[in-house]
Image (cartoon, rainbow, N blue to C red; front, side, top):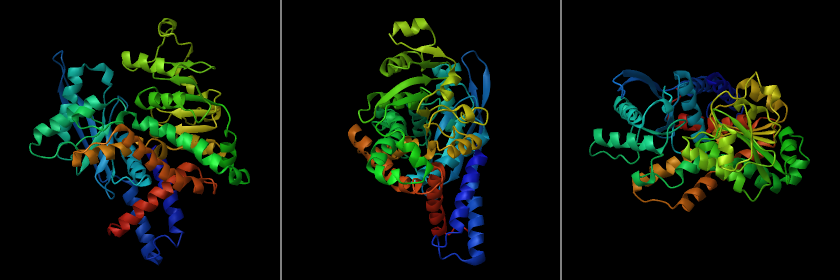
Length: 459
């Protein structure tokens, strides 16, 4: 996935290099030198921090757990990015996720840079006490590189507000007298977290889809109808039509996205399939999403896997293998799990005409190119799943000012921010043949390149 991101950034820089109206001060050899420098800066992280956390377990065993904190770029502000708790975490993955955070913050004009962290564990394999020790060790080992003005971690896959509360408490303990509320975001409200933070990413993911299909396409139906743009044609296929939705991943992002779709009054939504690490549940007439959310809350995040469990909660669904979700005959597919889900092996079986990336990097280069050539609309991760970092910024801001927004104020600011970005990107997207991902990258790279040039960092 890192190569995919670098490739698209290089394509974006190539487009800007030939555009003489962009940074017109740079001419001739100086321009080529500056753009070579830009490519080097954006395609590599500033620092990679790695450590082995030495953690005693309850049975007396002492384990050493690989962990990472990557600083990609801080031209726009402090490094910002979640800490992923997952057994598949590796250095290349964390570097790429930090890269995506840089682009995401630039796209949405959030004054943060790009960072990311990871701990190589299956969190469900550890007790609560052991997880707390792991969190404490992470803060101790990386204390010299994190902090409210340098690098601000947040939750990611496998972590949540509980882990951020533990980490902030340890940061406060080992940095007495220093500001600490902004050291981590995604905390519980009682510990200085923001109302609406937990729901922010899922709400933002669904909003980008709803705004594109309902608000934007409806308002621009006449101009899109005469457009030769292949993505405009796809969007018009869904206007004022019933929508069948499948959602891969039923964690914090996927479950909130499902609830937003279930409750939406603007579109004729029907969530017919959801999946997690164990199972896909399908019902052509639509699933009872609130009942499934309630079940997962009581069962460590897992969906029902047996007929008995479904009967207990009065949910009607067919139980299928988890991978079936990706190739179901639905109009819209939300990806809210992990990387590389749509790939060279399954790209030709994908039937959805709109794909929304709630997860980071869930579509490989091969699948992205193939589906885009078929006119499939892919709302990319850096556009769709930025709700978390936008509200993290609001949380960081509230912590600095010790004045807190209501939940309504948080959601209002979140949606205004995302709508502003959509209004900037969508006219260009429907006006040229580039996929939406490319349009978003060009915008991000434009902003980053301008700031890096103004800061004198290109030579």
